[in-house]
Image 1 (cartoon, helix red, strand yellow):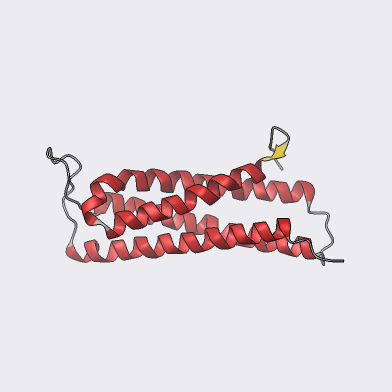
Image 2 (cartoon, helix red, strand yellow):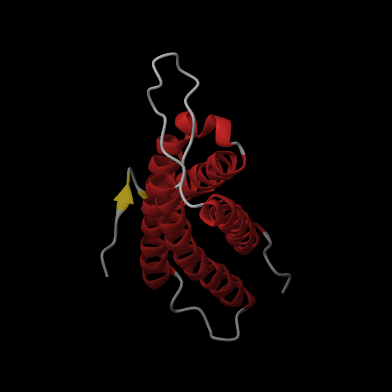
Length: 170
């Protein structure tokens, strides 16, 4: 167990804000990259960078959350509604961390394989188009992966907020 506090606060309560902001931003940027071939020269690398950063932040949130639970909540009774709410949040967080890896892989593949024209007079940023089936299938996979990422970041954040703010009545 590695307990990390930042200025007296558990790292998890700070890091989750990065996950909640950067992960949807990464998903929306990747979806834009997938559905707007004319803008791929502009969105290709921001989508990859945001996917890498978002995946990293999601994993830091997951690991710091496990640490936070072990250090402060593991002693809760097993039948405690608070413990059940925290474990539901943890389950969603684990799924999100795996979805984020898949999302990152798909976005990276798209960045490498999908072609695009350039809007610049110099032609800089233009990339040769891939096989026609790939130019159709891979954007669909990116959109699905982005949508899944959005769903799981919402479910995880919602479960965490409910575990924090909905105190059961005794």
